[in-house]
Length: 220
Image 1 (cartoon, one colour):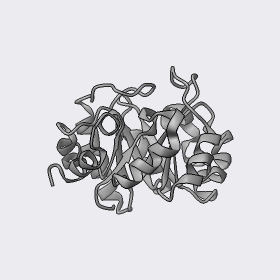
Image 2 (cartoon, rainbow, N blue to C red):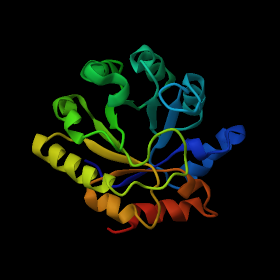
Image 3 (cartoon, rainbow, N blue to C red):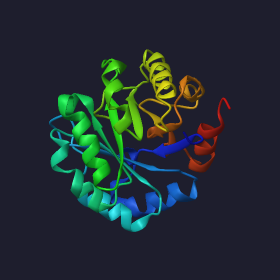
């Protein structure tokens, strides 16, 4: 796995000025751009889709980390790949027995593949799909809306996934998304995460560069 990376979630951005927001994040030292794609069915919110990702791709050289919170994600994988996604992550809860097949589809489209689990899903569901993952994304809030509080029990789940990844010997990133602040990021990293998603923590800051640097260095 790589060193700690910070992936601001553009869900918290000003959508009317997305080009400027992307430039701001690049200049502030972001490592990836986390794109929360919600369909109003899998989660109770609607955000954006393929065109937004394609337009973002035109404006940045940063990797686009596309988190698909949608039903039947396999129908859209190829289009998100074509739009410029670097990572495509899909939920176990949306894919169930098709998860391995969909992860392989993502890789076949030239993207890095990730499996996502919600806070109440056991980490054991990841065991058989780890060989097909470049990333595991642990939700530390229930998906659908930004600005939620970190669910403390997820820290132990991060540790469990870290042990699973180490035992596998595979170079799998561990990403955590939801409620991460300067107060708890050290705990999240110590548990084993190496990619930190931060939305309101970054976008509400007067100095985004300072906050991103602090998120990256806290607890190291």
